[in-house]
Length: 159
Image (tube, rainbow, N blue to C red; front, side, top):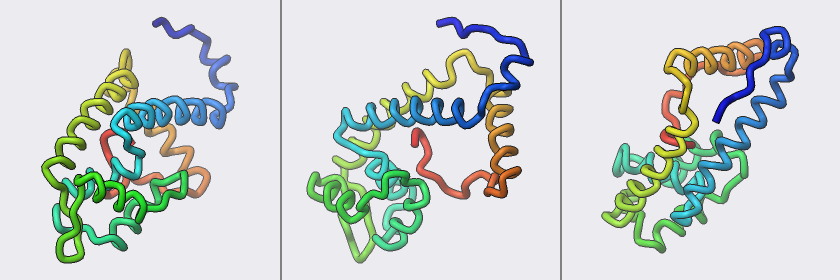
């Protein structure tokens, strides 16, 4: 696919709200579609990744507090934990979560799907171009009084 070319002058007048929103909807929509193929939502994915990254370190309250800032759909995290437990993917031991073998297998399947989304997003974009785009967005966030620092920990690998 070839992206149409425009002059700097034409592009400089474009509304960032439109383009950042269109990008977010397309990227997040692709992520959510791939996760849905595994019957997962983004909060499921975030839960699996956090628990896999630090088994036995995340209790309900702490994990919910960690994940809530990433959630734009106001999810019921207790329902997410219950769903993963009912599937046999997540277990609660001594007040903290651990993944089961089935949970890790499901997480790895979902990760493969999301890696393909990430590859499509980055197609034709150099690492320097990608970093420059993020730095421009970070500057805009900072200009508007937001936190432009990289997250200390994040849901990673596709949202």
